[in-house]
Length: 157
Length: 254
Image 1 (cartoon, helix red, strand yellow):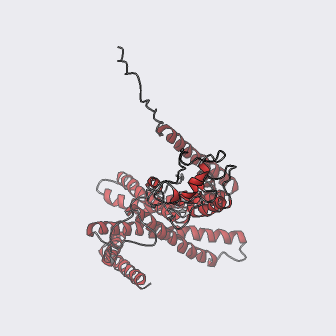
Image 2 (image 1 turned 45 degrees about the vertical axis):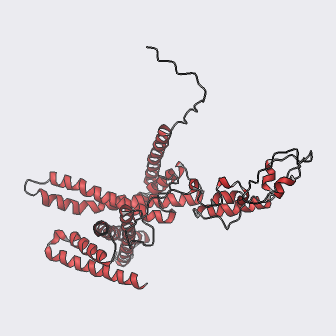
Image 3 (image 1 turned 180 degrees about the vertical axis):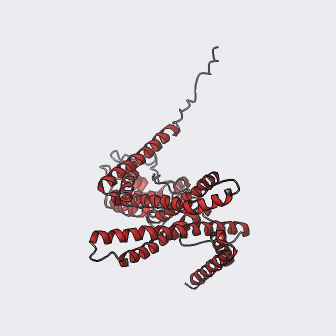
C-alpha cells in the first residue's frame, strides 16, 4: 500500500485519488451487491423495480462509507509519512489506528479506542501479509555458473 | 543522473532532474562532497594530471621504462579524482555518464494519458485515474458543502428554551453528517457517471474537447435522474449540460 511505488501521485494529491477510488469501489460494488440482493428480496414481477430502488437507496451510502474510510486513511497515511519521514508498514498501522478511532469518535472514547485498536490490527495483518508475500515471491538470487565445470553426470535412475 | 552527479558533487549543468525528491538530497550531498577534499599521502602522478583531455582515458598510465615515475608516486585510484571534486567528464568515454541518457536511473513511469487535448492539472494515467481523481474531488467538495449546509441547519435549529452546549453540538454534528453525506454521495455518484461517460466518449472519438464534456454531462444527468421519469431526466440532463458548459467556458477564459 505504501512502499514508495512511483505509479501513484505524490502525497497531498493521492488523497483525492484515494477518496475517489474508494468511493467508486464502494458505489459500484454496492450497486452490484444491492442490485442482486434487492432483486432476490422482491416478489416475482417486481424484481427490476425492487433492485433499482435498493441500488438507489443503499449503493451511494455504501460508497460514502467506503470513501470516507479510504480518504481518511489516506489523509492519515500522508500525515504520518510526513511526520515520520519514513515509509514502512508502521505507517499504515498508525493510519489505520487513527482512522478507526476518529470514525468511532462520536460513540465515546472507550468505543473509539476499541475501534482504533481493531482497525490498527486489521491494517497490521494486511501489511504483514504483504511483507510475507513479498518475501515468498521474491526472486531468488541465481547461482553463478562456473565456466569450467565437469560435464553433468547423467541422472541415475 | 542527478543522483550520481549529486553523489560525487559534479557540475549541476549536466545533471537532469529525474525526480524532485532527489533535489534536496542532491544539494546536501553535493555540499558535503564539495567541502571534502580527497587527500592521500601520495602526491598525484604527473602523467595522470597532465592527461586531462576528454577523448583519452584519464586512467593512470602504467609505468613504463620511457617515463620512469618517482618511487613514492604510485598511481592510486584517488589520482583520478584529482584531489578535488569529481568531474564526470573525465571518466572513460565508454562509461557514458555525461551524455545524460543513463537508462538505469530513468524511472519507468506509467504511460500518461495520450488522448489529444486531455491534459489537465494533474497528470493522468488513464481512465481509472481520471475516475478516481474526478470522483474524489467532487465527493470531497460535496462533503464540505453539505457539511456547511448541515452546520448552518444545526446552528439555527430551535432546541427549546435554554439549550445546553452539548445539545447544540449534537445538533450541529447531526446536521453535518446528514446533509454532508447526502450531498457528497449524490455528487459522487454523479461524478462517477460523468467520468465514465467522459472517458468512454474520449476513447470512442479519440480526442477530448468541449463537445465530449457537454455530451458526458448530459448523459450523466439523464442517467442520474432516469428513475424519476423522462421529464426529470431531461431536466437533469440540461442542468448538467449547462453546468458543464459554464465550467468549460470558465476554464477556457482562465
